[in-house]
Each structure stands twice: as structure tokens, then as C-alpha cells.
Length: 205
Ligand SMILES: Cc1cc2nc3c(=O)[nH]c(=O)nc-3n(C[C@H](O)[C@H](O)[C@H](O)COP(=O)(O)O)c2cc1C
Image 1 (cartoon, rainbow, N blue to C red):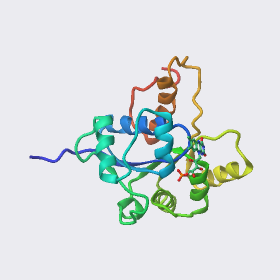
Image 2 (spheres, helix red, strand yellow; image 1 turned 90 degrees about the vertical axis):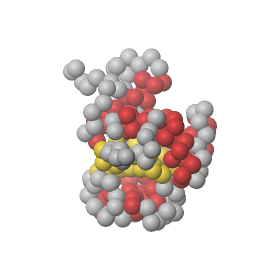
Image 3 (cartoon, rainbow, N blue to C red; image 1 turned 90 degrees about the horizontal axis):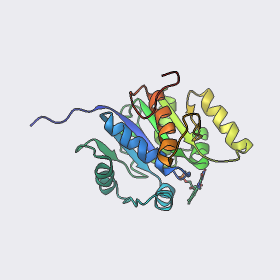
Image 4 (tube, rainbow, N blue to C red; image 1 turned 60 degrees about the horizontal axis):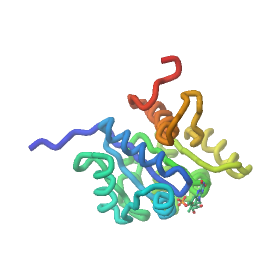
């Protein structure tokens, strides 16, 4: 039997900022668009997911992949997950990393680590690889208010070619549900990635 063929992988990292729903919905949207999705979830993100949603995801990568597959309707092999110190994962090297990575939501801690090249866990390392290889890197921070530290890191990352896409949904589409607000941000991420979607109309449509 032929293996299913997916569109190229996109790396999605969920870290411990508020807004776990953005990351979970992004995974669903990428799966629906037929992309392979390579996922990393920080320890703090697991806590945020439990706090903000009715979902509790397993920590072990294989079981995490299975749980995400079930909740997103992904095909076998469409979602792969990597652990915090899985240095042999393809995302840890320029020779194996996908052309795009999204950190959604992005904590200010991970933002800072990426801006300084800390690479202390696989999420930070994968982002470091994306920067050094000039691949697409999108960070979706959520914090308010922002300190000079946060703003300086964001400016530095923007200058390095990363896209800072704050989890700050607009209201001009008259959202009536939380899902509408979540989809606003996920649609913006998909626009950046050049992936077609029907989450919400583009401006002027
Ligand atoms: C429920 C909850 C909500 C949080 N919200 C935020 C947030 O909105 N922004 C942020 O930068 N950190 C937030 N934090 C703190 C981070 O999770 C914490 O700094 C953590 O060390 C980040 O680790 P990570 O970047 O490895 O995920 C939150 C923590 C919890 C438990």
C-alpha cells in the first residue's frame, strides 16, 4: 500500500505563554491543509494547556503524537513529536529542519532564549537553526504590558528575519466566540506561511 504523501513539514512549538488554543488550532489547521506537522511542547506549555483547555496532553513524544493525531483528525505519520532534549531530532540541524517554524504561543522566556541563541532545549535549538539557516521563523508572543527586555528581543529578532506576530486579535470582523478570536491569529500565521485557508476572509474580500 502506498504511504500517504503530505505537504512539507512545518515545525510548531507550544511554549508556556497564555493562549494554548492558538497553538492547538494551528496544528489542526496545518493538518487540515495536508501538511506534516512536527510538534514540540514545553513543560510549561503542558501546564498552560491543562489550565486553559479541557485537554491534558501526555508528555512522552509518541503518546503526545497519538493524542494530537486523535484531536486533529491527522493521518498516521502526519504528526511527529519531539522531546525537550531529543538532540537527534531533524529540527536540531540545518540539514533536517523544515523550511518553517512557528512558536505559538511564545513565552517571553523562550523569546529571550531565541533572541540570545541559548539553545538550552530542542525548541530553542530548532529556532536557532531556523535563524542561522535563514528559514522562516514566526513567534507568537503573549504578554502585557511589555518590558524593554521583551521589546528589545523582539526588535533584534525582527532584524534577524524572524516575524513577531503578537497574539493580539483584531475585532473588526465582529467576533462572537473565542474560536473567532483564535482563528483570527491562526489565519494570520497561515497567511505568513503562504498556506491557503478559509478560517476568515482576507481584508477586502
Ligand atoms: C497558566 C500560566 C500562564 C502563563 N502565561 C504566560 C504568558 O502569557 N506569557 C508569558 O510569557 N509567560 C506566561 N507564563 C509563564 C511561563 O510559562 C514561564 O515563564 C515558563 O518558564 C516558560 O517556559 P517555556 O518558555 O519553556 O515554555 C504562564 C504560566 C502559566 C502556568
